[in-house]
Amino acid sequence: MSVSFRSLLSLLVLGISLFVHAQDKNDDGPFVRYVEQGVQAQWYCQGQVIRKDFAQVAHFTLPAVCGFSKAIQVQSENFNFPSIGKYTTNKLAAISDIHGQYGSMKQLLQAHGIIDGQLNWSYGDGHLVITGDVLDRGDQVTEAMWLLYLLDAQAKQVGGAVHLLLGNHETMVMANDLRYVHPKYLKIAQEYGQTYPELFNQDTVLGRWLRSKPVLVQVNDSMFMHAGLHPDYLNLNRSVADVNEQFRLSLGLPKAEVKKNDTLAFLYGSLGPIWYRGYFNEPQLQEAQLDKVLQYMQVKRIVVGHTTMSGVYSHYQGKVLAIDGDIKSGKQGEILLYQNGQWQRGTLQGERLSIPELNSAKTKDMNEIKLNEGK
Image (cartoon, rainbow, N blue to C red; front, side):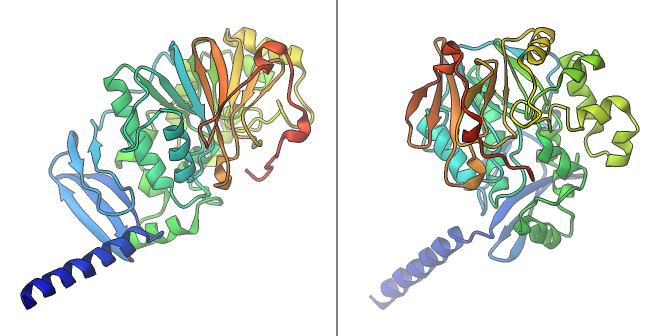
């Protein structure tokens, strides 16, 4: 009887320990690096670094030790870079600027049927676009990255797609600009004996996956990117595929090196696709100039994040859709939805609201915008 009691007591203590462990906000991982013998995974659990080696480099399962709560199916290390960047679908969802707010991202995706309660893809042959800035600011960047990594593979298996685009914060981290990194990650990287950018180097699973992602992608008649395009972009006379390749080859270059190349200087500059704010900030781009960009890109609209607003809004009579709905605050956020020819904005509570501005040429007033200049 006493043995049974001791066993029950031990189980109770273990359960309490696991509960406390699960609630530890400083837990994180995994970070997975390719090594000569396979891969090495690292977790940071209750103030301790846990390392585990695996002989395989792909098509095996990483256990959920701490940090990300789901086992991870590691994919092939040779991620294919999209050469076309043009897709069609009858069902589309798009979010932006997650910035480590994994809880809000997960809530939005579950509320609108993109993922199920077990964090699995449930959107069928639909397409999900994330217009950049998963990294920085928040303290659950790792969880957000791994969920998108898993969804990317799951969507492909059923004819869907996840289009993760690079934003200015992804390029900043790769270039060792750490101004907006949450202190938690600087500490954890130090515990691993690495710098934070090294956790996303080319010798890591997430690093290679990120480097396979574009900056521009067209879905149906809409061009998606992080920030926007100034008409001076036309002077580059480069295709979408070429622009994506320019970014891919230059990721991680120091700012001084970028400035030496006129094309890169523009693409990484304030008028380029990862920083431009001229659709919303003064001096605001004239609609006639925007029309030239749309005509050159051969699309009806541009969909962007980067400039924070209170929700998903239409501008320029539906020619620009702004989808940075302030997920980064951890208190709100919206998702852009398209199905059967209808555009909607979805809330965290699962509401779906029409976007009549796409048809009525009604643009949201500028006072509804909450600009974040330091972003």
